Image (cartoon, rainbow, N blue to C red; front, side, top):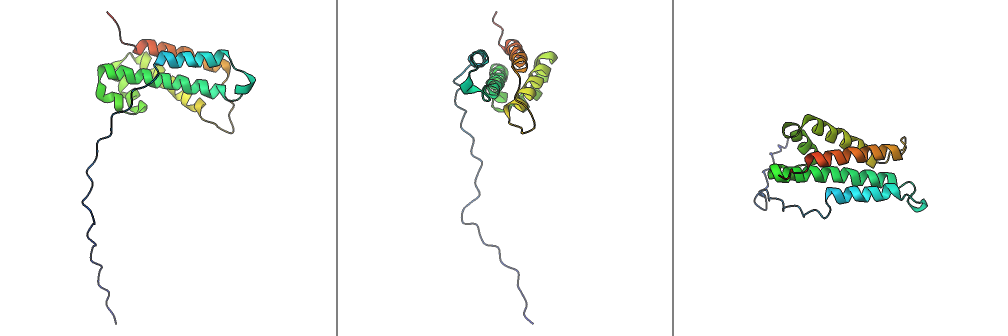
Length: 149
């Protein structure tokens, strides 16, 4: 009868890696107002060449404007939160901004996120839905903008 000895652990070839801090994100190229203006242009100039594409493009621009407004809000108040994902920023928003603003941000972001993705069983957002979201985004951007005194 042969006995099988347990294998000896193989030493690692290199020492364990230490976590490397991530580089700071690149500065954004568009402000929330510029993104909102881009969405307005698409809402007003849908053509045959953009059929089927423009509703989701508008939803994406609106969602990005919403996220950028929130990032700028945190950059001015708590810069460490500006690097967190939008969902985490939204959870923290409830403690800093007006409750209505936090709820409107979350509800609008959720609707726009759903509208940005293709689903085989759902239609694209309608013009009326996009206009309503656009108005909500504008209200949230205004509520999150720094107050000048």
